[in-house]
Image 1 (spheres, one colour):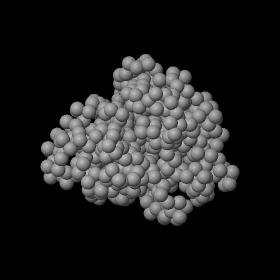
Image 2 (cartoon, helix red, strand yellow):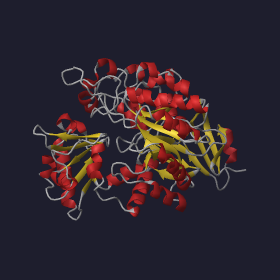
Image 3 (cartoon, rainbow, N blue to C red):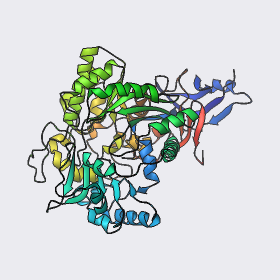
Image 4 (cartoon, one colour):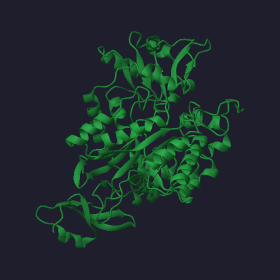
Length: 543
C-alpha cells in the first residue's frame, strides 16, 4: 500500500533516539519508520515532505495550560511582555481610549516586577480610567489590579475583611490599595461581565491556531469550571468537539471547588460523562492546593522571611485542608479520576504526595496517573517519593531562571537553603520520576521550544544572567521527552507522544535539528509543520 504522507531526508526522533531518517503515515497512524527504503511507499497521491536535514519529532503536548482565558486576553487589554510601570499604564490608557464603548476594562498579564513590591495601586489606574471599572489579573493570575471604581462597585473598603483564601492589599492608612490577591480576586472578578458563548469559542479556536503554530498537538486544560470570575471553557470545548473544529486532543481538568468537600464528587462524575466527546475528554480533577511564592501564598513547611531575612509568622495558604485532602483524593482515585495538583510550595508538594500515598494504600495500584504541577519548592526528602508513588512531576521550565520576579520577589523571602530547592528537574529525573511539561499559558509563553531552552540551559532565551542551579539542568533529549511522551502519559494518550509504528501521526517538523547546534541556540528553533492524525494543521510561511 502507498502511504498518504511520507517524510524523508532528515533525522527522526524516535524513543530510541535519532535513529531514523524516514517516516510513512497512512490514515491517522505511523505505518513505517526507517530510512531510504521507505521511498518505495510513495505513490501518485502521496504527500512527500523533504525534511532537508530538519528534525521530525512527536507533536508537543502541553500538560498544564489555559487556552480560553489566554485567547480572551489576547483580544482584550493585553499587558503581557511589558516590563515597566510606565509602559503598562500607557497600554491601559491606550486600550481604554480605543474602546470607549466597553463598560469594563478587562484583560491582564502585567508583570509584578514592574511595580514596587509587586503590588500596583488603584491611583495609577484611576489616572487613566477614572469612570469605568478595571479588572486586570497579573501574569500568574494569582492577583488582580483594580481601580477605585471597581472597588466601589464591589463594596470593598477599609472595613472589608480579607477572605479566608485571599488578601486585600492595603495602604499605610488601611485603605484598599488596588491589588487583590488569590481569593480576594473574586470580590471584583465575579462582577465583571462574562464572555459570550461565541466569544469563548472564538478564543478557543484562536488559541488553538497559536498552539498548533508552536507544534502543540494536544494539551491538558488545567481549569475547566468556574473560578474567581474566569470563564468556564467547557461549553466551547464541547461545541468544537462536536462540530469538528477542535483539531487538538484535549484533556479537561475539572475544577475542584475548594469551598466545598466530597459532596461535589457526584457532580464531577456527571460532568465527566457530559463533557467527554470526540477529541475532548474530562477525566481529570484539578485540585489547587496553594498559591504562589511571589505574593507569599505558596504553602511552605517553614515561614517566609521578611526583607531583613528574619522569619515571619506566614507559611502561606492551604486552599484545601491537608487533613481532608487524602480522603478526597482516595475517593476520586477509586472512581478512576486522575488528580492534577497545583502544588507550588514544599508543604503543598508534601500534602499532595501524602494524598497520593493514601489513595495507593486504600485502593491499590491504579492507572489514574496523578501529577503535580509547578513544583517551585520541593523538599529534598520528597524528591524520591514521586517515582515510588508513580506521581508525575509536571514542570513549567520557563520559570526556572534568574529574572526579576525570581531575584527580587522570591529568593530573598525564601532564603538561601530553600531557594536551592527550586524547580529540581534534574534531581527528579535522576530519582526515577517521570517528567511531563507545560507552560501555564497565559502565565508564561506557550512555546515549548523556549521551555526546552530553559530546561536545558536554566537561562532565559537571550538572557545573560548566571545559570540558575546548574545541577538541575536537563539534557535536550530528556527535555523533549517531557514535552512529548511525558505529557502524553498524563494525558492518557498512550498511542501518542512518540514516533513509532502504530502511533498516532501527531508530528512536528522543526526548521532545523537542535541537536546539531549549541544548547544556547535552542530557542532560535521554529516550527515549520504540525500534523494531527496525519492532517496538516499548521505550515509556516517558509515551510
